[in-house]
Image (cartoon, rainbow, N blue to C red; front, side):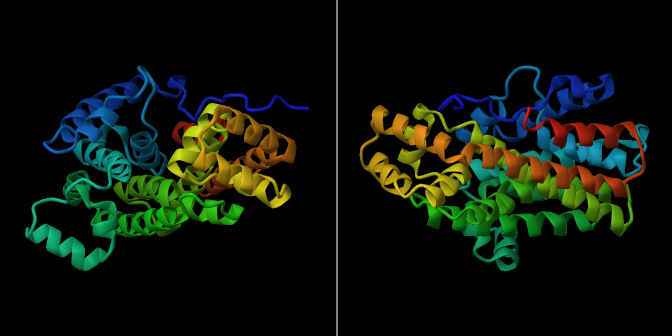
Length: 326
C-alpha cells in the first residue's frame, strides 16, 4: 500500500529554468510588484507579493515573457510594455487571493465602466485596487486586444469565485472541481500566455495555442496544489475552510464513508478524523487518479505548443508543464 497522508510539495518553478536575461527580468518584476502591491489598504497583497521563496520565479509573469518570446518577440525589444503586462498577470492572481479589497475609488469613472462591462465580476472580485492596477498596466500595452483579454479573464474568474464559494463545505463531483480550477487558475494562466502572443503580434492561431497551453497548465497547477494538501493536518485545515478538493471528490464517489467523514471533520477539526480521511483517500486510489488527471492536463498543455516555432523559449514552456508533477 502507498504511504497514507504523505506531505507533498506544492508546484513551484525550478530556478534553473531562468537564463541570465530572464533572471534579470524577473528581478525587476519582483521590485515592481512589491511597489504595485504595496498600496494603501492591501496588507494581504503586500504579504503575498513578498512571500515567494527566495530564488523561485513567479510563474505567471514568466509565462507572459516566455510566451511573447516563443511567439517571436525579439528579446532586444522586450521592454516596459512586456514588464507591465507580466505585472498585470501577477496582480490578477493577487486579486484572486484578496478579492474582498476595495475596487478603486467609489463612484469613480473606471469603477463605473468596469462594473458596466463586468457586471457581478466587480462585486465578487471585490475588484480590488490590485485589479484596477492590472487594468491600468494592461492599457499601456501596444496590443489593444490585451485589455479585452484581461476583462474576459476577470469575468471568468468572478464566475469561478462565485462557483467556489457556493461549493464551500460540500464534496463536489470531480468535474466540478476541474471547472472551478479552469475558471480560476486556468483563466489567469491563459491570460498570461495569450498576452505574450499579443505582445509579439502573433497570428490568431499562435495566440489561441498559447491560450490553450496556459489554461491546461493552470488546471494542472491547481490539481498539483490539491495533491500537496492531503496529509492529515492539511485536511483538517481544508475542512475548516470548506475548500473543494479533486481527490476528495474522487474518493467520495468510490467510498461512501468519505462524505460523512468529511462532514464530521468539518464539525470537529480533530487530528484523528484528519488521519482517517487521509487513509480513505489513499485506499480509494483518489490520489493516483489526481496524479493521472494532472498529468493529462500537463500533456494537453505540451501538445498545444506544437503550433509554435521551435525555440529555446518554447522548450522552457514545455519544461514548465512537464515539471509540474515533479
